[in-house]
Image (cartoon, rainbow, N blue to C red; front, side, top):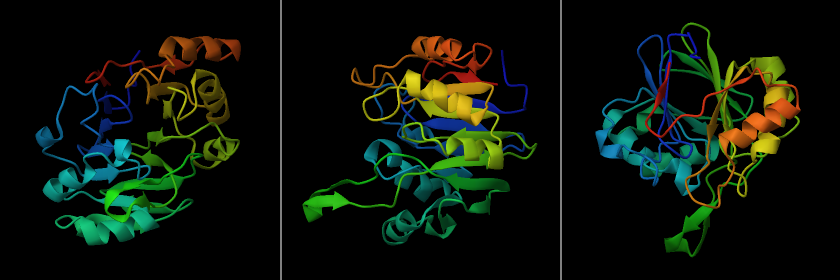
Length: 243
């Protein structure tokens, strides 16, 4: 069953998602098109109106600099990442909007709210022989032109404040990691669905590598165990689009 919300959502593997909005805008979340499951390369991305990166790990920041330099999107991001981008982005830096959790920014004609995530955010900085800190991890709730609200959780474990995300922002579709090991797996994701109160779930961050072993079928089973069998789990193949 589709969304029936004048919206297209394409999963390119891992946490990389493209959203086509009712107003004709293109949103990219965590654009690592170089992931081994993606059928598309970053060089093919010709349009990005809104770019959202949940945290600074390389499998989420991915190809963002290349894409932003070419397409000049609005890029709301956590404060520390915005400071780093000001020195490293070059073309496209004017679109960067530094913000933090609990804040809402108007960007590309859309409402973007930054929410919490339970994860880490440092990555290796070879030149400094230490980790590079690009701010805490976050998730995003985006309200589209027709009022449809989507939530990209980024990398996270389930956390009780997902109930606050439900009460404050009421997302209708959640993009949730289910792979396990580095994020929550299907058992925890089912509880996240319950806390969020969403009726549509797009599983992400699974199957990229063998260690990310959680599956949509396991998520189905865990949802049924919680009495949530009616929740739509949209298990896409990489490159497939949900409308």
